[in-house]
Amino acid sequence: MSETAEMKVDPTRASALISQLQGVKDKIAAVAKGRPVRLVAVSKLKPANDILALHEAPETKHLHFGENYSQELTQKAELLPRTIQWHFIGGLQSKHTKNLAKIPNLFCISSIDTLKKAELLDKYRGDQIAAATNPDIFGKIKVHVQVNTSGEESKSGCAPGQETVKLCKKIENECPNLELLGLMTIGAIARSRETTPENENEDFQVLREQRDLVRKELGLGEERLLELSMGMSEDFEGAIAMGSDEVRVGSTIFGARGPKSEAVVVVA
Ligand SMILES: *Cc1c(COP(=O)(O)O)cnc(C)c1O
Image (cartoon, rainbow, N blue to C red; front, side, top):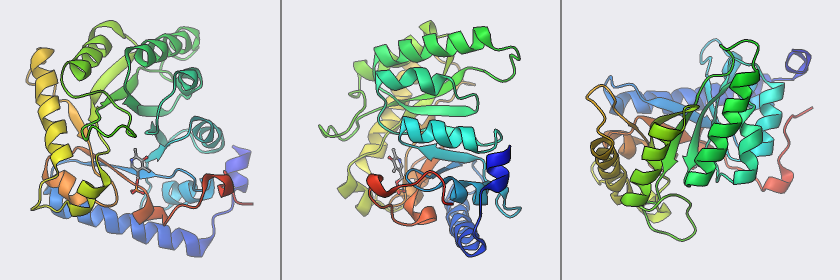
């Protein structure tokens, strides 16, 4: 891929990124105590060069990257190697489902929160699968249902309880092109700041309860453990102590983010 080959990776920047990512991985390992926890490196508003650095470095060979904006993800996915596993973690809008469904190496969409968005995503992915000449390239899209555990109006997500259960049921039973992987929450910032492995975060408690409720209501067997995506830079260690299977860490790896208007997809 010529663009990737030409993309510059600054060695000083690369070594800083590698050591920051390694630092997060070491902290995860210390709390996870052997349990597998996926680290999604949240690269939103950071250039593709940074992603390439972490993906290609022999020390990290990092695979999972998370993005919040549909257009930015589409652009980066076109530029960067297909071996990357993309996660869409931002606020999902119905109008974005068609383009997201076209990304072959999209690993997971973590922010499904309405029946309509599930339906659209299922339909568009179905179109891609039907048209694909190589069935190995386009598979089901894994999804997390986002739960608004803190009840804040500014946060997206299903309300805990029947709204969450109903959407999970729909995905499980009526969306053949989606795979329900688990539940995701962001949680209240104030609670994040206070989260430590000793001080349990209420949002994470709610997500755990919702996971148990969904498994029960859907009658999922022992082998079907729904995962929890919870924990960000401020609170990932506490989240893992509470059973998180996936943490989404951005600023601790890539540094503080500037305004969206100043973000560039590729640094020349
Ligand atoms: C930006 C973002 C993150 C990463 O946040 P940091 O505090 O930079 O680690 C994680 N999850 C979601 C949904 C985000 O939007």
